[in-house]
Amino acid sequence: MKKKLLALLLAMTMVMALVACGGNGNQKGNNNQNTEPPKQEDNTQTPEPAPAPTGASEITLWTYPIGKWGDEATVKALTDAFTAETGIAVKVDYLAYADGDDKVNTALTAGGAPDLIMEGPERLVANWGANGHMVDLSDMFDDTDMAEINAVNEGVMKSCTHTNGAIYEYPLVMTAHCMAVNLNAFKEAGADQYLDLDTHTWTTDDFIKAVEALYAKYGQTVGAVFCAGQGGDQGTRALVNNLYGGTFTNAEHTAYTWDDPLNVKALEQLKAMDGIEFDASLAGGDEIAKFYQGALKMAFCWNIAQQMDPNGAGTGAEKTVTGDDIAFMSFPSEDGSSKLQGGTWGFGIFDNGDEARIEAAKQFIKFMCDSEHTVDAVKAASYFAVRTTAEGTDLSNIWADEPIMAEYTKLMPYLGDYYQVTTGWAAARTAWWNMLQAVGTGDDVAAAVAAGAAEANAAAAG
Image (tube, rainbow, N blue to C red; front, side):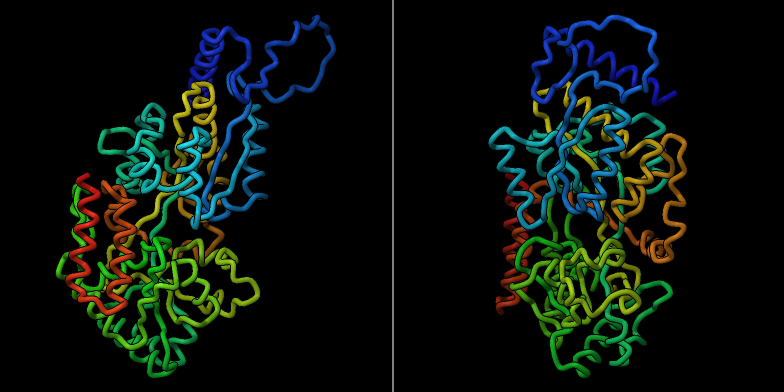
């Protein structure tokens, strides 16, 4: 019933839009057949074609490499299914994290942004939404949608909602970011005794002892605090915050608190450890590659997508560490109970001023995030569904045939605050990795931390 009502409302909206525009089909990307002369009726039976779109006949989607949403063949299967059901074609462009933000910002400046974009709240809400580029999607959620999503994690909708009350992201999947260890290397060094492989947790003391054992065995860097840029910085933030219980922002997400003395203590500890290097030549993806290659014995930039798709690191034939060699772990904390960074990914719509395309984009979102097709969209992302059901389709058993995914759910209760929507987030990320570089080059830790936090807070206030 809900789907039929949505379809009826969409159809009425599109018809009114066409009447207002004179019904001439001249909107950009509109290939409606309304300009064709009427055809004579006959009684010949022909196969029923895909329904003609009531508004825009084509929309554009830009997607970051979220699981296999960065794989053309996988995405084509999903968009082809959408086109077959709606008659709306989808043109897709694939972004890389290295330069994707620049491409989007350039497109926004030039007035050529896509209709849809797939990523997380730190971009869709705290950046482009906060700067007035996104469509408020509040009208897409009814009480059932909210209940289904909140039943999994109440933080999801909070992360997709701006402080002004607008919802700039429709969520699809979520996960908990973590770290990983080379289990064979740990065993060879006798460091596996410091891992709880049942709960996938360890304490700060265990972490310190493990690094000492690994360094004694291999005599080289075993873990890198990477800081070449912002890529993967959720790992370095979680490492620093969890070691002694420091915080990154306040609870209201209005100010940055990483000048917390407990974070200073953590950074001083890391800087003093043989085997841990502050490496300004590496970003998160580079660290993962070195971990797969065996050069590093642990990775701080990790999540289930890496575990399921080792080819995602782009290391090719150089990978020597895969599969059962890798154990995922929560970040170390004093009592073993960490607060993990969460990841939420979904879709946002850029406000390009074309209501027909906006409505078509909303159809796409509902198709992927709240229909019987959601199972396929979630599996493509290689993460966990943000809701319990979608239009009656049970999403709780999506990964029943994947033991590693089932095991990974042990980390989900450790999800911490989703603070990536704090004001001034983009500038704060830059200040964070610049601060790590300063610590790595020998600056006074407390002074470097204070300067970085002050820079972030200046951006938040401005």
